[in-house]
Length: 235
Image (cartoon, rainbow, N blue to C red; front, side):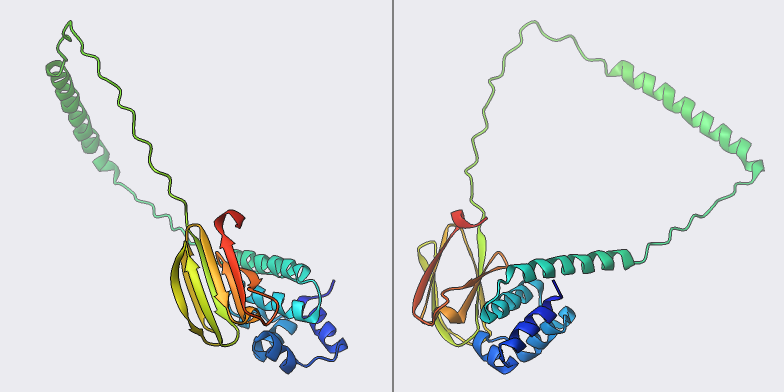
């Protein structure tokens, strides 16, 4: 298998599709599409968005995006490992201290006197602090069982990105939190504990991300759509 950019570029050229047509269809800028075909991932946005671009590009060309996503993951990990190896190691300087021999005997005498005084003081304090004999009657303390803490379910994060202007409504845990028009490129993010319901006029104009990981369009068709995200379905 060739590189990500070579494979996708060859498929696009064989099908006679221009980059302008791809940009219009999946709403990803031409400069990002060119960077993907050149394997220039340094100029692309964050990893989570780059994966979304590759998934959308491959899906539009009618090929399985998973091999390209796996290849990009390995490439990204190797770049991170290389960056860690290239980091300069800290220089540790060892400084030696020299003591004049003529001071060794006075210092040893002072330390010995200090140790003798400390030992005598420890003996005197231990004699004074001997505990009294315990009384005959000992009361038993009742063991108090700690109250169980109520379990709180951890929330999950959902992000919506509009690739074209679109009306969107969001309901989180049965409470409406958003209902307005989202512009091209606009992103919105929320936290939910159990469920998220997304309603939109055009399902193929809205991409969803769960915990910063792309899960695809709300609907592959350009129709009014509703999609429910449940915490129990998140892996």
